[in-house]
Image 1 (cartoon, one colour):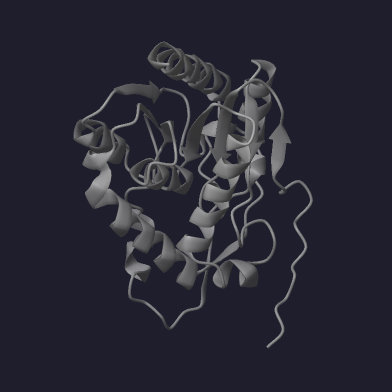
Image 2 (cartoon, rainbow, N blue to C red; image 1 turned 180 degrees about the vertical axis):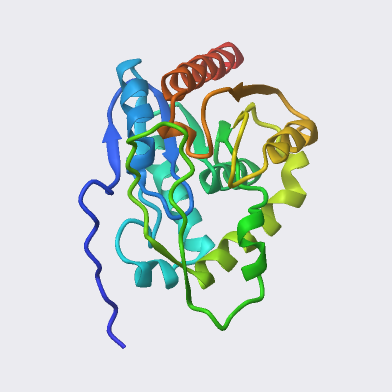
Length: 253
């Protein structure tokens, strides 16, 4: 069977901004695209960082393409992005929104990231749990993105493959039991109200971490915080953290 090359939805492609020797990989979430982290990426670029937001395989094209992708494909998109940043950057920090946060934690576990920032990291998704073993239905209708701000448009599929949901749950099952083994600096950020991933997951994550860690709550955002009211404040928090990580690296040399 011949593979189908699906076109990328306009506006959903990867983006790269060349800057200093601190590289920030921005990883979007499940059913999202780099468009969901673009405003934050532009703000970080203005602060001088090198920023790359890869498009995770199967995202931003067609739901059938999504159905054929796996969590290993998504993680490969992340590691290839890290490798690209390593070509010009001394320090690489992975910043992940939702499932992107889960992938960031996996990168830290495998020693591929110098530090990570998780934003509403997907360590459970209660709304998807019923599809863990439900194989009869191929697709489900997706709810509107969980964003408090009005008039914000996120590029997402309006239907999601149940196979992709099971891949997400498998990724969570792989990463969650290992998080206490993460020893790189980690910034855990979550929204005060999140209708997709329980804020308690981020609180639990912070408690489990044994290494250097920081914690912040976004008071005026829902799940897709990178597109919500607090996105500028979020960008500042990330920038300050990345500068601190780079200072630690410089002092260690």
